[in-house]
Amino acid sequence: MNYCPKHRTAFSDLEVKYQKEKAKLYYIRYNFVKDKTKSITVATTRPETIPGDIAIAVNPKDKRYQNIINELVIEPLTQRKIPIISDERVEIDFGTGALKITPSHDALDFEIGQDHHLEIRQTLNFDGKFNELAGPLKDLKVPEARQKAIEILKNNNHLIKEENYTHEVGHCYKCGTTIEPMMMEQWFVKMIQPFGKANKSLRDLAVEAVKKGQIKIIPKRFEKVFFHWMSSLKDWNISRQISWGIQLPVWYCQDQNNEKCKSHHGIIVNIKNKPSKCPYCGSPNLVQDPDVLDTWFSSGQWPFATLIANRKKDFKTFYPTDVMETGWDILFFWVARMIMLGIYYTGKIPFKIVYLHGLVRDKDRQKMSKSKGNAIDPLAVTGLYGTDALRMALIIGNTAGNDIIISEEKIRGYRNFANKIWNASRFILMNLQGFDGKKPILKPHDKKILKDLEKTEKKISFYLDHHRFSLAGETLYHYFWHTFADKIIEEMKTRIKEGKEKKAAQYLLWKILNDSLKMLHPFMPFVTEVIWQKLPNFSIKREKILMIAKWP
Image (cartoon, rainbow, N blue to C red; front, side):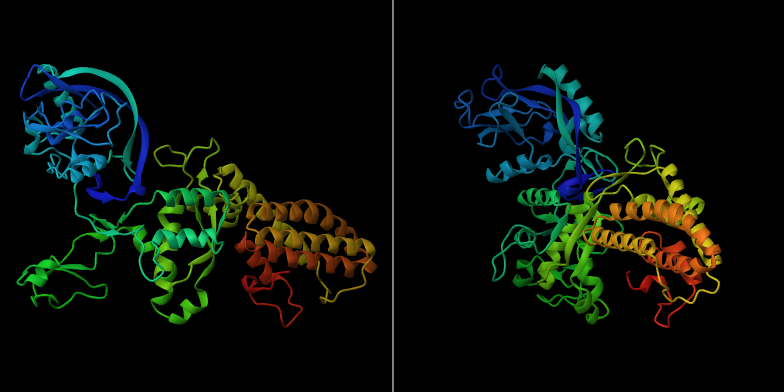
């Protein structure tokens, strides 16, 4: 398992963050038992795990080592005798072509060890310290143990040389601690094994839904990324050794009194409540598994679980959802799991469209974080500039799948836009005296203004229908400020003063403001709702709140 010594929990493969690191490749001599003047050299980046070695593996096609397979060598830190075995998974061209096999601390070594029926020797405890099996490294943490091992190997003349080496190292995605591969019993979900009448795996269900177009991913390039990830999918461990989360609905019988109970290992799974007794032997002595479920396993059921929980009518009405909007970075953590679990449980896709937004970065394109001091507190800036300004700043320039740059200057700019909307609306409201809401006779120039408004409305609708939210917001911004406020309102100021032109001017101002508020509302709901409540109501059919008003 992927284990974080700091959080003291197992993680799935997805929760391991790999980073390139500079390291050392240590060439270490293992002497033969029969003739200690002869040796085999092994290259490793982790000399501290030598006490966990149970074999040296070579490729059967490697002519250098064909005559020594099945020979015994002495492990140089605890002086144990271990065999030389052959396995085709050993890379002939890496290092010396000889691989130390440490099943309890390496995934590939574990597979090789299982196939060759080798013992498991776990020298690292769950607290990140080595145990008594590590001999002279006992009670040391990994960095300390590595230095100690190098010192001993040098003194024993078993360290031949060191080389600079760059490799990818797995880290905990939460705290950055180096992940330790550990032997642990965990609960898994089978992801690639076919099941049921359709004989399809969870992976098959998700891949098929996207390939057939039942689920559309925006932007489309992420479909390729989705398929690539799915092709390398492994079974998913869903148990975590942390203090928060949904506890596993698993109980263990403490009194395995009959063969049937023993054959089931005394394990009882009941998702609704604790069983009163063991169904196999009748014992009431049961204890619940202390582990909790991976949060992504829980949240992966969100689309259907939330709807089924209280009212099945809600499930029939709202499942599947039309659009699932989330960040591109959790396409696999969350979206893929929702698709697989949703189809498995309901037989239907959970949503029709997945819209992936970008991550928020600062003006220098750095990821925002507290440690860098470049994070913007959303509550603080909304207090300064208003929630509408922050919303617009997050939408404009934010295209699907691409990270967005945001700064306080940008938010301040859309605060100015909110002020522009307020001031323009205030002027119009002050000049609607005597207007009854009826459409007067309009001049060709007035009709052209309304025609341009209609074109803008169609353009905005097209952008929204095709999930091009940034373009919709930009278009609205420029229309309201540069066309409506700077040109049309300025022109109407003169006409409002003229008796014959007043009704037409009032109608144009009221109509454009009315429609603009409806289009702006999804982007800037607060200022537009307040203005909407102040607009004169000329129709009994007019909605009381803007949120439910009919789109223009």
